[in-house]
Image 1 (tube, helix red, strand yellow):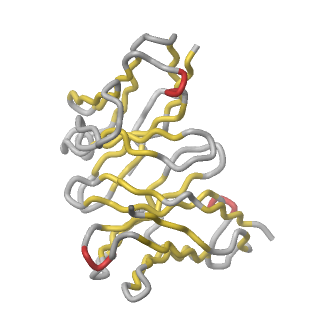
Image 2 (cartoon, rainbow over the protein chains, first blue to last red):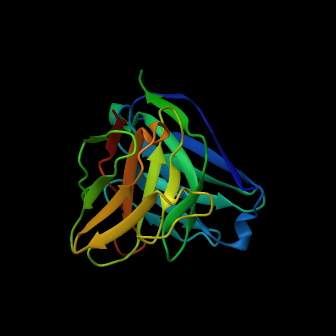
Amino acid sequence: QVQLQESGPGLVKPSETLSLTCAVSGYSISSGYYWGWIRQPPGKGLEWIGSIYHSGSTYYNPSLKSRVTISVDTSKNQFSLKVSSVTAADTAVYYCARLVYAIYYFDYWGQGTPVTVSS
Amino acid sequence: QSALTQPASVSGSPGQSITISCTGTSSDVGSYNLVSWYQQHPGKAPKLIIYEGTERPSGVSNRFSGSKSGNTASLTISGLQAEDEADYYCCSYAGSSTLVFGTGTTVTVL
């Protein structure tokens, strides 16, 4: 059974960098699939942040591209998200998920981790 | 890349059928048959219920069905049950390996 688990600080100061990691179990990232990050501000809808392939190829939401970096560590079977210069608008629950390439749907999701941007 | 448009809320009585629309543009929904739908209960992660426009993952009730016409995709829930009360989101491929979600719809079972 594929499982994903997000981890990282729950509180980040404005202007700093938000960093999260998604640990994958039950499946080797190196075996294929794309892996993505999605966020959900409090009381609002889902927003796709970006996706990465095990080779390191990345794809980002154009509205966030200038501040987002997604990377993968196949040796640890995990991938990571960094969002720089955060503001209160980046406060959200952050989800990681497995993306089925070419058909583009997320079949497995992490439970989500809340991140608050506040001084 | 703007969010796909969904009605904020849809309601129905137990046993009835409801349909949730998801309107995009010719750059996303209209160009690809790659719309997925997710069900999200409060405090929980989204769950995939439809992919590739009309396909249901194993284990998802056949009361959920998807369709598309032009720039609008739709999710129909037939035989509405109390457990279907949740938020629903569509998601479409938007070209160049990018994705866009819908604004979300809250389904209420009366």
